[in-house]
Image 1 (cartoon, helix red, strand yellow):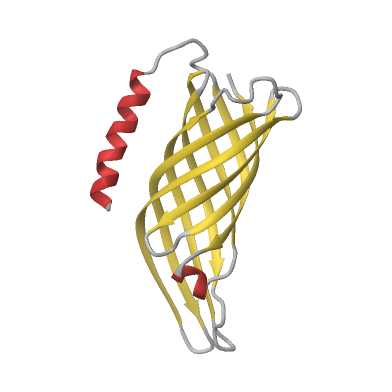
Image 2 (tube, rainbow, N blue to C red):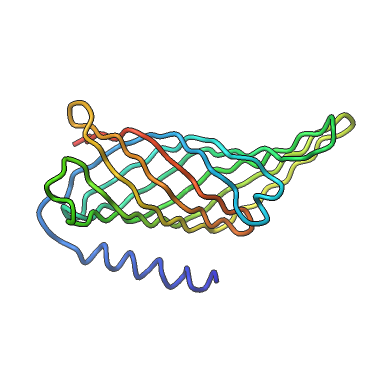
Length: 184
């Protein structure tokens, strides 16, 4: 599966670099809060995760932006013995492409599809009455999402999305709500 990702990344970069139209050059900065419901075997042992992320966007065309994201996400373990706690925390470092289709031109809102790929730098910590343990692991992740931007304030937008984090054996479905504004 990782070999497939190594083919997808250069293809996306080539597509982005070949695009050229008016509207390029605008840069946006955003921040948001995330809630993630673990799925699969990860959901059997971990509760809902929470975190915050920051995002930088650059408009390549009026309908296409490239993005970069960094943040902090954390999940707590379910069903652990009394006196024991376990936390999985991760720092996502993601790059992506966001596309705004034209099907809702008459509405003040903008819908989008977003595909991000990158690294999830994770750490697991377990602590109890007699000992504490920790380990770290970096996983490749891919995160497709769909969202909506709603105008709010002067030059800003509320940005809400639903996404799927495919993080090795620690996948989650996430909701993100944030605010973004143009910085140039």
